[in-house]
Length: 451
Image (cartoon, rainbow, N blue to C red; front, side, top):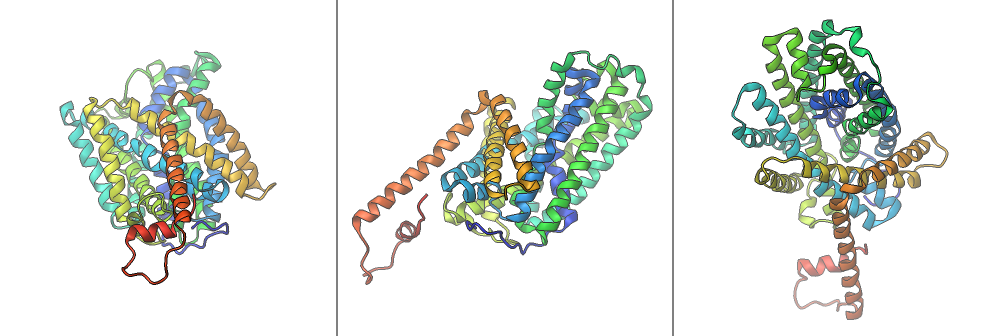
């Protein structure tokens, strides 16, 4: 997995299932809240923000597609960084995703539970219980492998798109031209704020890199899946933003659930159930897509000795990484317990998630510039994406402490390995005729590569 040549995939994931996983990883919980938030800060010009972020997403999504198609590896971004920048940097990227991005899992579950409780009239004290229930199905599905998860994801994504189309269709007759004036009520500064909001709506392209080895034909399927997902998610956010602004007008940003308001315009009786269905599908779909990536990444990190080797089982294409999936569950439940203890305050966990994402993207694009052939389309996409990610890193500087701590942990692992290597050299070679079998620790020390 650490060779510099492209890897041949022997997975079983088809284009349809893969595309569904890509769409779910990008068309996430932002669908529930971002249209209203963007309309509040930018007014009708929030439509421009959607278009801008869609264009900015092309180099990022394109670069990840090129890398995933050329190097189908469960390590994803960490494997690209390993090839280009070495083991320590790769370990940083892996830890950022496994232990940083994972903080977003309980956020997704709680957001879904909040909306379900709100529209169903359930007491708010039951939100943690509903969130815990949202956790269970994606873990069970992924325990049967990415192929099963992909099939389930196709159904969830189809339902999600169908409900979004239905809500838009119900609200479309209420769209009025006066709602689009004045077009720039908060100036271009408001558009900039809306762009920063929608950047996170279009994040998620790195998820596909971790399941790239599960595709039957990654060189053909991954670029197609990326292109389809980019068009579908962009169209959903754009149409939804237009209808939100046109139908709700100045009230678009006043409610916490703009989709609920849109659905009520066309069908007051069906509005609440529709939003409840959307919330549940979004939460389940996003969790399902991300868990597939976490499991494969955890197994890959273990295979490269960045985690205990026991978790490496299932790293091969077509394998089911149940041990790494269980580790993901432990990490996610740890974050969930902290979240419940904090009174369901989501902000700290969102910051851990987003700061880790920015760090991963920046390191991944630097690796792409070094890996891809200079002057090719993929290389130019990587250059543009690297510049954009560097700008995002500057904007996120205030919330990078969790990512810095995880990076420090990766450096400590490197230092410990080097110290052990020097100690082994001082002891000299072991005698060939052993009086007892080597322990697992001895075998690991002898065969561990230098970091």
